[in-house]
Image 1 (tube, helix red, strand yellow):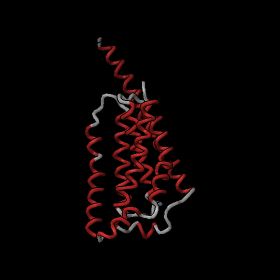
Image 2 (cartoon, helix red, strand yellow):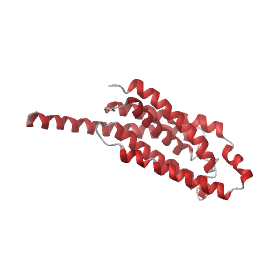
Image 3 (cartoon, helix red, strand yellow):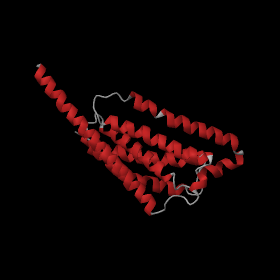
Length: 211
Protein backbone atom coordinates (compact mmCIF):
# COMPACT_ATOMS: atom_id res chain seq x y z
CA UNK A 1 0.00 0.00 0.00
CA UNK A 2 1.26 3.45 -0.93
CA UNK A 3 1.68 6.08 1.78
CA UNK A 4 -0.99 8.33 0.23
CA UNK A 5 -3.46 5.44 0.14
CA UNK A 6 -2.77 4.62 3.78
CA UNK A 7 -3.30 8.23 4.84
CA UNK A 8 -6.58 8.37 2.92
CA UNK A 9 -7.77 5.11 4.50
CA UNK A 10 -6.91 6.32 8.01
CA UNK A 11 -8.71 9.60 7.38
CA UNK A 12 -11.84 7.79 6.24
CA UNK A 13 -11.68 5.51 9.28
CA UNK A 14 -11.36 8.52 11.60
CA UNK A 15 -14.45 10.10 10.04
CA UNK A 16 -16.43 6.87 10.47
CA UNK A 17 -15.42 6.62 14.12
CA UNK A 18 -16.35 10.25 14.74
CA UNK A 19 -19.76 9.74 13.13
CA UNK A 20 -20.33 6.61 15.19
CA UNK A 21 -19.41 8.38 18.43
CA UNK A 22 -21.84 11.20 17.65
CA UNK A 23 -24.61 8.79 16.66
CA UNK A 24 -24.09 6.76 19.82
CA UNK A 25 -24.22 9.82 22.08
CA UNK A 26 -27.38 11.17 20.44
CA UNK A 27 -29.10 7.77 20.50
CA UNK A 28 -28.16 7.26 24.14
CA UNK A 29 -29.53 10.67 25.10
CA UNK A 30 -32.80 10.01 23.28
CA UNK A 31 -33.18 6.57 24.82
CA UNK A 32 -32.53 7.93 28.30
CA UNK A 33 -34.98 10.78 27.84
CA UNK A 34 -37.78 8.56 26.54
CA UNK A 35 -37.30 5.98 29.29
CA UNK A 36 -37.15 8.56 32.07
CA UNK A 37 -40.14 10.38 30.58
CA UNK A 38 -42.11 7.13 30.52
CA UNK A 39 -41.46 6.56 34.21
CA UNK A 40 -42.30 10.14 35.18
CA UNK A 41 -45.47 10.22 33.08
CA UNK A 42 -46.81 6.93 34.44
CA UNK A 43 -45.80 5.76 37.92
CA UNK A 44 -43.33 8.49 38.84
CA UNK A 45 -40.68 8.56 41.52
CA UNK A 46 -41.61 6.90 44.82
CA UNK A 47 -43.39 9.24 47.19
CA UNK A 48 -40.89 8.97 50.04
CA UNK A 49 -37.73 9.17 47.94
CA UNK A 50 -36.49 12.29 49.75
CA UNK A 51 -36.20 10.37 53.01
CA UNK A 52 -35.61 6.93 51.48
CA UNK A 53 -32.53 8.04 49.55
CA UNK A 54 -30.75 8.55 52.86
CA UNK A 55 -31.04 4.85 53.73
CA UNK A 56 -28.19 2.43 52.89
CA UNK A 57 -30.42 0.03 50.95
CA UNK A 58 -31.72 2.69 48.58
CA UNK A 59 -28.29 4.20 48.09
CA UNK A 60 -26.99 0.71 47.34
CA UNK A 61 -29.73 0.07 44.78
CA UNK A 62 -29.28 3.41 43.03
CA UNK A 63 -25.49 3.16 43.03
CA UNK A 64 -25.40 -0.44 41.82
CA UNK A 65 -27.78 0.11 38.91
CA UNK A 66 -25.98 3.30 37.89
CA UNK A 67 -22.64 1.49 37.97
CA UNK A 68 -24.03 -1.29 35.79
CA UNK A 69 -25.56 1.21 33.37
CA UNK A 70 -22.25 3.06 32.97
CA UNK A 71 -20.00 0.01 32.59
CA UNK A 72 -22.34 -1.83 30.22
CA UNK A 73 -22.92 1.28 28.09
CA UNK A 74 -19.16 1.66 27.72
CA UNK A 75 -18.98 -1.94 26.51
CA UNK A 76 -21.79 -1.34 24.00
CA UNK A 77 -19.95 1.72 22.70
CA UNK A 78 -16.62 -0.03 22.27
CA UNK A 79 -18.12 -3.12 20.67
CA UNK A 80 -19.45 -0.97 17.83
CA UNK A 81 -15.90 -0.05 16.85
CA UNK A 82 -14.09 -2.92 15.13
CA UNK A 83 -10.54 -3.61 16.13
CA UNK A 84 -10.73 -2.12 19.62
CA UNK A 85 -9.87 -4.22 22.64
CA UNK A 86 -12.87 -5.03 24.82
CA UNK A 87 -10.82 -6.44 27.67
CA UNK A 88 -11.04 -3.44 30.01
CA UNK A 89 -14.73 -2.91 29.29
CA UNK A 90 -15.55 -6.55 29.97
CA UNK A 91 -13.47 -6.60 33.13
CA UNK A 92 -15.20 -3.47 34.38
CA UNK A 93 -18.45 -5.45 34.53
CA UNK A 94 -16.93 -7.30 37.48
CA UNK A 95 -17.38 -4.19 39.63
CA UNK A 96 -21.21 -4.25 39.64
CA UNK A 97 -21.05 -7.97 40.36
CA UNK A 98 -18.71 -7.46 43.32
CA UNK A 99 -20.87 -4.66 44.70
CA UNK A 100 -23.95 -6.86 44.35
CA UNK A 101 -22.29 -9.79 46.10
CA UNK A 102 -21.18 -7.51 48.92
CA UNK A 103 -24.73 -6.19 49.30
CA UNK A 104 -26.12 -9.72 49.42
CA UNK A 105 -23.56 -10.77 52.02
CA UNK A 106 -24.37 -7.81 54.25
CA UNK A 107 -28.12 -8.34 53.86
CA UNK A 108 -27.88 -12.01 54.81
CA UNK A 109 -25.77 -11.06 57.83
CA UNK A 110 -28.09 -8.30 59.05
CA UNK A 111 -31.46 -9.97 58.41
CA UNK A 112 -32.69 -12.95 60.41
CA UNK A 113 -32.93 -16.08 58.29
CA UNK A 114 -36.72 -16.22 58.49
CA UNK A 115 -36.88 -12.83 56.74
CA UNK A 116 -34.74 -13.80 53.76
CA UNK A 117 -37.55 -15.19 51.63
CA UNK A 118 -39.82 -12.20 52.24
CA UNK A 119 -37.06 -9.73 51.37
CA UNK A 120 -36.16 -11.66 48.23
CA UNK A 121 -39.72 -11.83 46.94
CA UNK A 122 -40.62 -8.26 47.88
CA UNK A 123 -44.01 -6.82 47.01
CA UNK A 124 -43.65 -5.97 43.33
CA UNK A 125 -41.46 -8.65 41.73
CA UNK A 126 -43.92 -9.28 38.87
CA UNK A 127 -44.17 -5.57 38.11
CA UNK A 128 -40.36 -5.33 38.09
CA UNK A 129 -40.12 -8.13 35.52
CA UNK A 130 -42.54 -6.29 33.25
CA UNK A 131 -41.67 -2.64 33.77
CA UNK A 132 -37.87 -2.83 33.57
CA UNK A 133 -38.00 -4.42 30.07
CA UNK A 134 -40.66 -1.86 29.14
CA UNK A 135 -38.40 1.00 30.21
CA UNK A 136 -35.59 -0.64 28.25
CA UNK A 137 -37.42 -0.56 24.90
CA UNK A 138 -36.36 2.98 23.94
CA UNK A 139 -32.71 2.66 25.08
CA UNK A 140 -32.40 -0.73 23.37
CA UNK A 141 -33.82 0.54 20.08
CA UNK A 142 -31.58 3.61 20.24
CA UNK A 143 -28.45 1.63 21.09
CA UNK A 144 -29.08 -0.99 18.42
CA UNK A 145 -29.56 1.78 15.86
CA UNK A 146 -26.34 3.52 16.88
CA UNK A 147 -24.28 0.31 17.05
CA UNK A 148 -25.53 -0.47 13.55
CA UNK A 149 -23.85 2.75 12.42
CA UNK A 150 -20.54 1.23 13.51
CA UNK A 151 -19.22 -2.10 12.37
CA UNK A 152 -19.56 -4.70 15.12
CA UNK A 153 -17.59 -7.84 14.38
CA UNK A 154 -20.04 -10.12 16.20
CA UNK A 155 -23.68 -9.03 15.67
CA UNK A 156 -25.12 -11.28 18.37
CA UNK A 157 -22.58 -10.22 20.98
CA UNK A 158 -23.02 -6.56 20.04
CA UNK A 159 -26.78 -6.92 20.39
CA UNK A 160 -26.36 -8.57 23.77
CA UNK A 161 -24.09 -5.72 24.90
CA UNK A 162 -26.71 -3.20 23.76
CA UNK A 163 -29.36 -5.21 25.62
CA UNK A 164 -27.28 -5.31 28.79
CA UNK A 165 -26.72 -1.56 28.59
CA UNK A 166 -30.42 -0.90 27.94
CA UNK A 167 -31.37 -3.18 30.81
CA UNK A 168 -28.92 -1.45 33.11
CA UNK A 169 -30.23 1.97 32.11
CA UNK A 170 -33.83 0.84 32.62
CA UNK A 171 -32.98 -0.65 36.02
CA UNK A 172 -31.24 2.57 37.07
CA UNK A 173 -34.35 4.55 36.13
CA UNK A 174 -36.81 2.07 37.67
CA UNK A 175 -34.83 2.11 40.93
CA UNK A 176 -36.17 5.64 41.54
CA UNK A 177 -39.70 4.24 41.68
CA UNK A 178 -39.19 0.73 43.08
CA UNK A 179 -40.29 0.42 46.73
CA UNK A 180 -38.48 -2.90 47.18
CA UNK A 181 -35.02 -2.05 48.46
CA UNK A 182 -33.49 -5.33 49.63
CA UNK A 183 -30.29 -6.39 47.84
CA UNK A 184 -31.85 -9.86 47.70
CA UNK A 185 -34.74 -8.44 45.65
CA UNK A 186 -32.37 -6.52 43.40
CA UNK A 187 -30.11 -9.53 42.92
CA UNK A 188 -33.04 -11.71 41.88
CA UNK A 189 -35.65 -9.73 39.99
CA UNK A 190 -33.54 -6.90 38.60
CA UNK A 191 -31.07 -9.49 37.33
CA UNK A 192 -33.79 -11.55 35.65
CA UNK A 193 -35.32 -8.45 34.05
CA UNK A 194 -31.94 -7.28 32.75
CA UNK A 195 -31.18 -10.78 31.47
CA UNK A 196 -34.45 -10.73 29.51
CA UNK A 197 -33.46 -7.46 27.83
CA UNK A 198 -29.96 -8.81 27.14
CA UNK A 199 -31.41 -11.90 25.48
CA UNK A 200 -33.74 -9.76 23.37
CA UNK A 201 -30.79 -7.61 22.36
CA UNK A 202 -28.85 -10.71 21.33
CA UNK A 203 -31.71 -11.97 19.15
CA UNK A 204 -32.29 -8.61 17.49
CA UNK A 205 -28.55 -8.03 17.12
CA UNK A 206 -28.11 -11.23 15.14
CA UNK A 207 -30.73 -10.05 12.67
CA UNK A 208 -30.15 -6.30 12.28
CA UNK A 209 -26.45 -5.81 13.05
CA UNK A 210 -25.11 -7.98 10.26
CA UNK A 211 -22.93 -6.26 7.70
